[in-house]
Length: 143
View 1 (cartoon, rainbow, N blue to C red):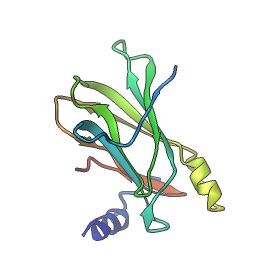
View 2 (cartoon, rainbow, N blue to C red):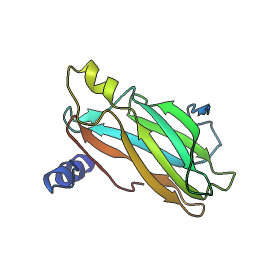
View 3 (cartoon, rainbow, N blue to C red):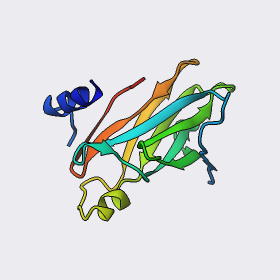
View 4 (cartoon, rainbow, N blue to C red):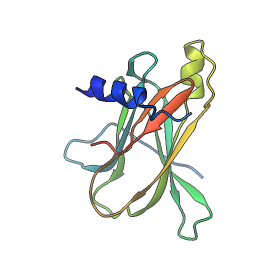
């Protein structure tokens, strides 16, 4: 079902052309408000080993502060951004550092990195994935 969804997403033309705390694997019993993953639609599998940096926009709206960073696991995921025990309302961006991932495959990429800006309101879970190839990407709010 998920494969069909991603396939339909791409076929529908949706694809568009400070120090941080490292993110660890989710701790048992700890809930996280933000997760992400990357699906490499060229390979048809998750993108493993991609560095991702999380930033938060300061209250004045002019400066991005690095909050956390991590590297996608074998499923192309990072599930442990922003512990839910604290309020996390604000504007954030995930910076997916994709250049080295595609370089390892011998591919040139139009997008050496992808930045996705979004707003967290309340205590709900936010899953911000991307589907990507060397020449396009799409994003949506997942679950």
